[in-house]
Amino acid sequence: MLKSEQNEFITRTGPDTPMGNLFRCYWIPALLASELSEPDCPPVRVKILSERLLAFRDSEGRLGLIDEFCAHRGVSLWFGRNEECGLRCPYHGWKYDVNGQCVDVPSEAVESGYARKIKLKSYPLVERGGILWTYMGPADRQPELPEFEFAIVPDSQRFVSKRLQETNWLQAMEGGIDSSHSSWLHRGDFGHDPLLKGAGGNKYNFNDLAPVFEVVESPGGLFIGARRKAENDNYYWRITPWVMPSYTAVPPRGDHPMHGHFWIPIDDENCWVWSYDYHPSRDLTHAERQAMTDGLGIHVKYIPGSFMPLANKHNNYMMDRVAQREGRYFSGIEGVAMQDASLQESMGAICDRTKENLVGTDNGIIMARHRLMRAAKQLAEKGTLPPGVDPQHQRIRSAALLLPKDAPFQDGAKEALVAVLGQPQVTV
Image (cartoon, rainbow, N blue to C red):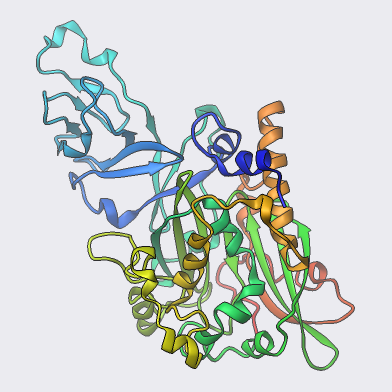
């Protein structure tokens, strides 16, 4: 368990907090590229790390992420007109470019130079892999663009979605690196979800409900190995990489697309759950892409016009007690994503970790917490950049494979955990 002050330290990510400064060392997902689909399209509100921002694409296709509020009287620029390479506030006509620079104050003479004195806070916004990424840290420490494999494969091999989750980012992320729960919470989905069923490794999840966890540090975070009993003097290993601060990759199942998440704080009580699917060596099939669009696998169905899941805490996640009793869904809730979200949201907005009773299967969570806190302290005290910033740390994969009982997973799966473009995943 964590002490109260440790829980406070690791969950708060607003400006000038240790964990907020840690997040600001990385490129982080801000928007789907489709949300700013064309020049002069409507601007989009963005709230990340407790900062209220506004994103827009100008007349020449340039991307901007600026303070949401006009420097004049504090009006939200979401109401603004996106026109002629700038965003014009409808209240008094002040206009800003993609860098937050005011370029026109109609009430002031141009020759006065008044507009040049006004500049809103802004952050870079770049497109890669269907996502618009932002970097919110010091300009002189801006890292290279992210190189997670899903973001650099061709578009035809990738699907990305996001959803709102009404919890602190950490308890959501901790669920992502806890693969022991899949044998229970998601057991019903292995038989009918087209993005999960049919994989040879599924039987090991059912046959061994008490996996043994081994966790080792990687350059960017952790490799979390879950070991289950298998035949012929082997173990079945499912190896989950975690790259700081919040990237996870779920171990593959057969030839199904690989998938995983980012968990990005909106504020201290809400987060964006970014979910990606990709196949490293082939296009996604029409059926696979349609299943993802329909909210299967790790994706969700939405309330129309929003990124709020259709099943949510306000309608009890559409729980079906008959389906629960019959075993179609172990928790009575449809879909892997909302099975996770429902239980994580049930912990409250910020889980009280002083009341936990952790066991061996929680070793990955324990080590991730300590690595996050250690990195945030080293950043604050020494200015040391944290793990995961270097693109080399991001060129990793998850894996699912059989290994002899006497083989340490970090050695036996060493090559399988390296992302090589065009090469199929190692899976059972």
